[in-house]
Length: 387
Ligand SMILES: NC(=O)c1ccc[n+]([C@@H]2O[C@H](COP(=O)([O-])OP(=O)(O)OC[C@H]3O[C@@H](n4cnc5c(N)ncnc54)[C@H](OP(=O)(O)O)[C@@H]3O)[C@@H](O)[C@H]2O)c1
Image (cartoon, rainbow, N blue to C red; front, side, top):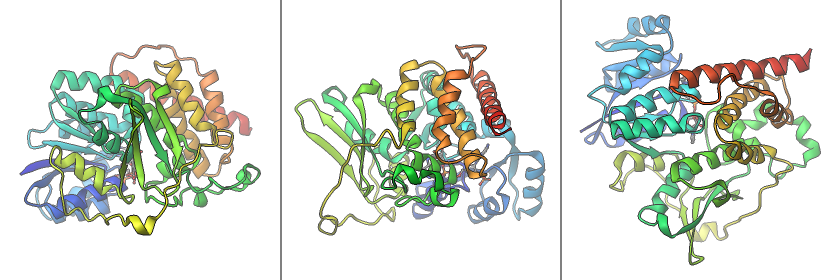
């Protein structure tokens, strides 16, 4: 019986992970559940599994949660709570489904204490991949991707890394792929979060609509698979059936295909190296699908993808700057302070104008502090242009 910590249990990834745990109760037991402030949802899951450790954002949330629990559990809060629970002896595997940079805390401390870390949180890889690698080396932990494209590539590469020429990530293109650029001014937050194929949190849905998400995934792939950016390509595949493609030295292509359902990569990461059955994912009907469609991405309409390649080339803290800035511009778009079209414009301005005091980061505390600095800088950039 393995002890599982679900960090971000109330989110889209967290709920999919809980569904896998429910189906495999004899194999896995949730020992940690966390959320930011959605304590009513956390309470529901905590009661169902009688989870012994719970983490929320503030002491006040912790007090409110504790008052409502019908059994005895330790309720912790904040960064320290995430850190402590990531390192618990009872935790064998962490599923990191927190959105935002705070995901780096459980991922880093989990790896440092030798755990398996099933990582969905892309922000921590983009902004702090170097620290995750160091923690993994130090603690002999195991980082396994949950992002569907990276899970696919991970599965396709097993034992074949030396034969690979290119990695190809697929992108659905999001809800506006066919929309003419002239109409981008009219895009609303409601339209942007309505992803055609995947059900996800609001932030990642907007990132999918701008293709920033695919740009982030390129950065992630370079880090996870040790590939130079020129060997990581993107194709538009509106059906979201093929999630990752690997091109081999002899010109063969290996595809990984399934209906879009995050339970598949989550279960793969939990069971690895075993391949599980009974995870609730619908089987692909090849005849019903008939054709697979692939197109080149339109970088004029979706310049965010280009920005990602630019920051990889710049290296150092630039991926962090792009990631932190994107958190702000998406927030600003969702609260109707900026338009959809302005998202890449502000990100470009940020990359050109942000001058960090320090370019080499030595700890995740420094990383979190720089992240905050970039967030403030980007909000100022937006406020100044609006006044
Ligand atoms: N959803 C997908 O299909 C998918 C696919 C690939 C990768 N990812 C990545 O997985 C991560 C989660 O995505 P999601 O779609 O599941 O997001 P989501 O539905 O918005 O859920 C986010 C989770 O993180 C918690 N959280 C948010 N901010 C936090 C903070 N500052 N401190 C502690 N906990 C915090 C939330 O708690 P509250 O509920 O209390 O706010 C919630 O449990 C993201 O990095 C995303 O890019 C997601």
